[in-house]
Structure formats: structure tokens, C-alpha cells
Image (cartoon, rainbow over all chains, first blue to last red; front, side):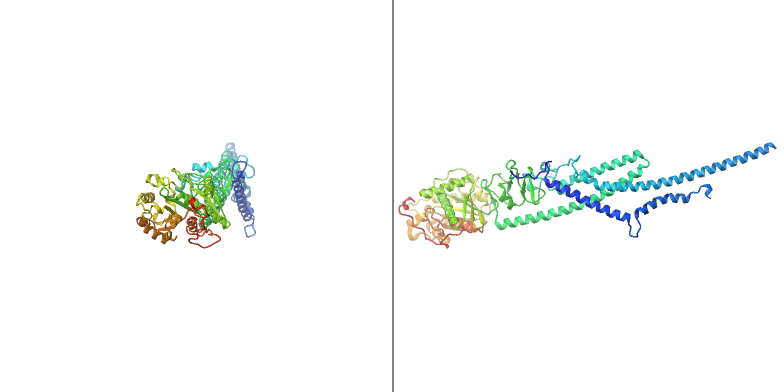
Length: 75
Length: 541
């Protein structure tokens, strides 16, 4: 009787291992990509956080509207 | 007057109302615009948060989708042996596999199962795109930018994942291609160095690509092309789950070799060793079987004296060897070979020092060579590198005092029939070697004394011509590029080095596949040093 190379689910054990390896590798790659993205988001090289810039930019929309609008009593 | 005052008051009030209305509208507009500014800012921020969430979810989605953290609802679209044989995994079989299709084995993970797994993950991404799209459509409000941002983040993760997986697949496929090529080259080199060959013992056809049976007894599936490829580079996984080697060298040693043409099981280890083929032909009563028995026993003696062994590989071969020993002990002639189709070749494994060789001996009744149509089953002649023509010298007119030539006619007919068969089968006669074995050297020596030929090829040829066999000699030399003449004594007890020993024919054939059988203690050829036959046994001949 030879040793079967199939797992309980009927697929070869090497398929399961490959699938795990592929998953781990893709996770590692994506986490790396995310880490790079996070680094870029938090620090753009000039000491400024891109997230902060994004928040500032989004709030600047409101500021731009405020700068372009005046209540009657503000003039 | 009062009307005037009233009109002025009305006008003033109207102006005041108009002014108040304008101010109110102005203030309201500013308020709305400023609120909208806030809302847009918040929406942009919400979109950013959604983007990050989508990005993170896209990163973990493949792992969840592939069931690595637990099978869950993941049911892989399996690329298994059945799908391979149906052609839905590897496509239709190539031309060289057309006769038997793809083997029942699991394909390599990359790229076959891999593609299906990638599709499964991609479909999960698509599900999420639909979900986010539907959510955005239903909410159409504050959740819209979140959905759009999440979709965008998911898309970025999806794109990164596709590129990463494409690169991974390319690297693995490249690795497989290189490893497979190297494995094949190494296997070819090993087989070439060992001179490994397979000639079917049943249908006698030669193949460079033997089939192998799965080593699991309850499976026994045939693998027609076990070499490295899409069904395994280092190890092949049979449909039953048994791991099989992918090199022909290893497979021939570990698995049951099977002829790809007739699917007959071959002897153990067949296909891993060089094969020495000795196909005999000749007229009825030429002494083929006696020559075969004597040669076989002689080889066994030579091998054993050199410290090696000779093993019969089939039941028929074992029976033949036992009969050969019994006949040699009793000094009786063998019974005539039955006039039937040869069932299979006599197959022996010879092991000497660290080398091995398969010995295949094929004998057929002389009647098979009387008519062309009776040679149809004798396919082993078509691919044999050398043919052994057994000739009884007492059919030559020069040795007959009664002037009869019917024996020579029969010998000539046997030769002609076989050559006609070879030509009909488009066999490469010009490359084949013909060994003319002239039997009964002992009787010729007894009856003709000094006129008997010296057992050296040129001398035997000259002697045949002198005995009026010149026409036959000319024909043989016209048909074959190489013709060698051997004078043998199939019934004497000759020393290992004696040129008349029938075993010398097999030894010479083995040397042509670089397998040396030591001639024994006396070492060199000792032409004519026939051992004296014990008194009382001479007459038994």
C-alpha cells in the first residue's frame, strides 16, 4: 500500500500547500504595498503628513466656500 | 394728506420688507452654501476612509476567498485527473499522445489549478463590486462616497493582486520549464549512458518511451508518458494519489514497465538496462534450439564464474532454463520447437559487477520461415540490430556424398523468406548485422578432420564457399552490410574462451552494447581448446 498524496478533501496535499503559499505571498505583497502606501500617506519626504494634507484639503473646500460667501452683516 | 402719509408709510414698509426679504434670502443662501461646503468636505473625508477600508479588505479578501483561514464556503473548481482526461485542463492531447490521451494524473498547481483559484478570488472581488454598487445606489446619500471610495480601494488592491499573481505565475512557470528541461536532459543522458532500452517480450516492438503502471495495487492505472511536464515535474501524482517518479530511469527501476503498443507487462526493471537481442532463424533442423540452449547455459556459466548472476525474468524463461539444465545433464537433444507463434521472448537479466543487461532470446520453428505469410508475427526481426542465421553445414553439397540439394534449398528458402519479410517491413537491412552460425562443428571435425574450418570468421566463410555454399554467401553479403561467420559446437563442453562455444555469440552481442562478460579463468580466447568429453558421452551426441 503506497502513501496517498491526497488530502482529506481529495485534492493533492501539494495543491493545498501551494494555495497557502500563494495566499501568504499575496498577503505579504499586499501588506508591503499597503505599508508603502501608509508610509507615503503619513510622510511625503518633506516632513508633511499626506493624510493631514488630505484632511486640510478636504476642509479647505469649506474654507473656500466661506471665503467666497459673506453674510450681510459681515460686510 | 393722510393719503400721502399712508402712501409714504406703505412705501417705507414695503422697502423694509423687501430689504428684510433680500437679507433673509442672502443669509439663507450663504448658510446653505457654507453647509454644502461642510458636507462636501465630510463626503471627501468619508470617501478617503472608504478607500482605505476597501484597500484593506481587498488585501485580505483573497485569503478568505481561498479558504486558507478555514474552508467556509470555498469549494474549489478542481482541475483533477478527470478534467485532464476530458481535455478541459490541458486542452486536447498533443499528437504524440493522440492514441491514448492524457494520463490520469493531477496537473501541476501552477498554472492549472492556480488559474481556477484566481478566478474564484476574482469572482469574490466582483461580488463585492456589485455589493458596493448596489449600496451606493440604494443610499445615494452620505454613503455614496464611502461606497465609491471603498470600490476604488478594492479596485486598487485587486489590480495589485492581479499583477503580483501574474508575476508569481510567470516565475513559477519559468522555474517549472527550466527544472523540467533539466530533468529530461539528465534522464536522457543517464539512459543514453546506461544504454537503456525496452523491447517488448510479447509484441517485440521497441520503444524509447515505455508506459508504467501505478505502483498502487488497487489502482494500476497506466501512465503512458511519465516524463516531466504538465502532470508533474519532480513527482507525478496518479489519480489515486500515489506519488510516482517522473524520470524514465527511476520509473523503470521502481514501477512495472508496460509495452505502449500491446500493453503487456514487461519483466521487472525492463527499460532501465541495455537489451541484447538474439533473434534466431534458419531451416527446420538447423540446430537453432540446441544452439540456444547451449549458448544460454554457456553465458550463465561465464557470468557465474565471473561472480555475476543470470536471472530468468519470466515464467517461460524459467521453464526454458530448467529444461536446458535437465537436457545438458542428460545429454539429450531438445524436442523440436512447436510450429506456433512464439508467445514471448526468453528474457534474462544478467548482472555482473555493477552493470546489468537484459538478454532477449527469440526462437521460432523452422517451418515459420518456409513461407512469407508465416513470418507475419515475427516482428522482432524488424528492429533487431543483429540477426542470427543458424545453418546446418551438412546441407552443403560439398559435405554430402549423396548429391542431394534439398537441404540447401530449405536453408536458402529460410534465408530468402526472412529477407523478404524485412524488406516488406522496410527494416534497415543495410545497418543490421548478420551472424551466420554454422552448427555441428564437432561432427564436421570428427568426419573431416583437418578439412574442418578454423573457427574464425574469414576462415569459416572460405570454408563455406569451398563446400559449395558460395551462392548463399554472396547473397548474404549483398543483402547485409556486415556478415560474420561463426562455427559452433552446441553439444560439446567447451571452455569459456573457445571460439566454438555458442556463448561467444551472445558475449560478442553483449560487447556491442558495451557490456563485457569476462570469458572466465582462462581469460583469452583459446581457439580449438575443446574440453575432452568424458568417455561414454561421445556417443550421446
